[in-house]
Length: 159
Image (cartoon, rainbow, N blue to C red):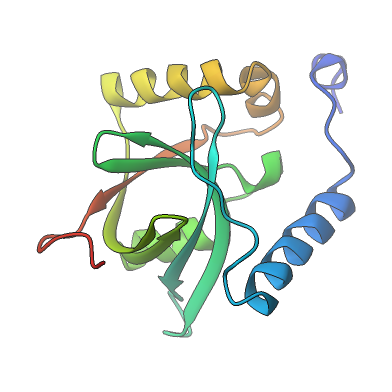
């Protein structure tokens, strides 16, 4: 690891990140969705459950992601716990952009896409306001981290 990356903001070891993800998802599932989600507020991101369709299996796949509201859209990042590679949910979403989202406010159908250009810069800066270490974390990855916009599917919010 380069000296620049060692000097960045601290992250727990990869095994711990993976353990925390699986525990969070298991608690969400075992509680019937009553535990593990929260609304985004001010300078704090929320937690949502997103269901994608597996790009190879065709099976539903669930993941819990951080997000913030941007008008009617929810914004997240394909950051893979700041590790290398793209997260499976992001690869699935690129193959099948339609997703189901659960937040504390209920269920909604959405369509995902990557933010680009000025929109990406604006949304990245918003994440930077929420997480002061964002740039240090992102520097750990060799490629650009996708900022993902989940837009309401046509026909309403599914609630």
